[in-house]
Length: 232
Image (cartoon, rainbow, N blue to C red):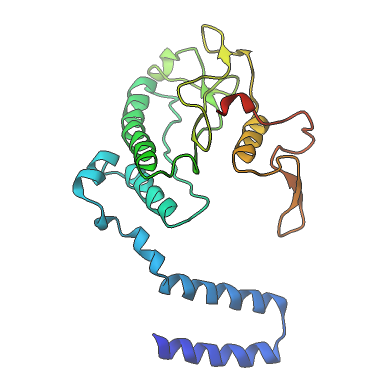
């Protein structure tokens, strides 16, 4: 492997001398970074066999559960942003069976992650966000075997750690969970709240690599801001 890397390096140096292209240079930097990752001792974080069977079972022996366990290990290794996804919530058909099955996967993994981060003294410095892009309709669609359709009008997100108060709710819906009637929160507010927890300026204009400007609070959302009431 090292001999092949040396040969590749020699070829690349000559190529870059003869073709001083920014794109070629960037590709070379990406290749070098990949090699550094391959040699990093931090790769041990991905070895879930280092965890006891009891811990792995507590998270759940499924992709999401083991993903949350890996997330905890990555936090311990200093990784600053981690995403774990759990799909199949689009319950247009047979909603109650589908939601129950997904919740069983979610509950054990999410609670185990929070418990482990707290026990390791990492929860206060780690913000855990559990969210979706919309909820489900209050109406049960009998023609679709008790399904529920998309409903962006009202749904819930969870925040834990990162200075967030425990055991509280913010906002309220009507009795049918059809619309928000108290303390509505937009996604721009949620993003601003995440930024606030991380010590970032939610209103700052940032440029993407393609020079496209954006703000964490969203475009043209001067009224968006962090929900500071959820912090202790």
